[in-house]
Every structure is written in structure tokens, then in C-alpha cells.
Image 1 (cartoon, helix red, strand yellow):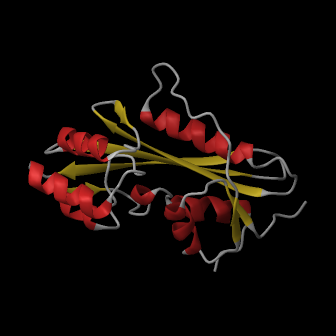
Image 2 (image 1 turned 90 degrees about the vertical axis):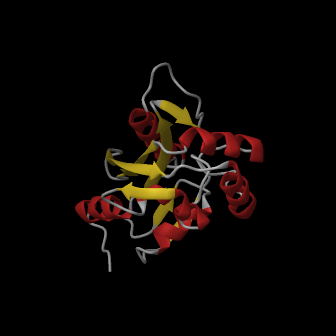
Length: 194
């Protein structure tokens, strides 16, 4: 079997789709139906990798699909920061992160249709928040409405003003898909990248 030159992104995230477009390869999006419940004492990196693999497997039912799964887990002192879902929860997460470091574990898995094996990578990005007062938090949440973002910010938007610095090997990982690692994995599998 030859490697398909069209990818399937196992995600409905507009953020991940916008990132994948940067690689200039054709792809389609497919919603993965995966149970994202936490498991015991699973750490952020382990959980992100487990879910990235599960998402790729969930949409790989049709043979011959080259599938990319990805997941991101934010942690503060080892505790997982979920997508807030409400203004109040976003404000609470930002208060807790003020003046502290939040780790973002971003996993990517590429499922090879020829043998079903997963080729994976987990990127860790450290976000150093500046000290945030209540006015800044309220103004930021009202502006960007980061209710669907782990950690309650959009670094590609005004959220970048909340930080003292970001330590990363791949700036795209923080948005949700580590493109440097993904491009490496795709080349390794034989996909022609521009």
C-alpha cells in the first residue's frame, strides 16, 4: 500500500485546522468520538498522548487513511486545567495562574494506514504568567472570550499580553498542534511536504 497524500485531521478544532493548513497538504477534518474522561493519577503528558492516539484510532475505521490525532492538556502544579466553559471559570483559572507557570502538554499522533502503528511526539511548553489583577482578568476574558481554551487564554490573540515569557521548542504547540514535530513525523512516513 502506498502512503495516502491526503491527511485526515481527527479534530473539529478550528485552531488545529488553521495550523495544519500551514503545511500546505490536503486534509479533511473528521470528528473523533472519544471518551476524554480522566484516568486515575494520569499526568498531563500521558493523558494528552493517550487522547491523541485514541482520536486517531477513532477516525481510522476506513482503511487507507493517514490520520493525525492531537490533544493538549494544561497543568498547574500537576492539576489539569480544563476548558473553562464559562466566564466565571475562565476568571478563576487566570487568578490561579497569575504570577505562576502553567505547563502545556501537546501530543500528536500520526497513524500509519499501512500497519496501524502510531508515530508520536509530546511537546511541553511552559507559560510564565505575569501577575494579573482583577481588572486585567475581567478585561481580557471579556475581550477574547477564551471559554473553549485550556488555561483560559488565546495566545494567538490578546492572551499574549498576559505573559512574562513562553518557553517552547515549537511555538505552534501552544495553539494546539506541534507543526515542527508533525512535519518531521510525516516526512519520516514518506509524505511529500512542499
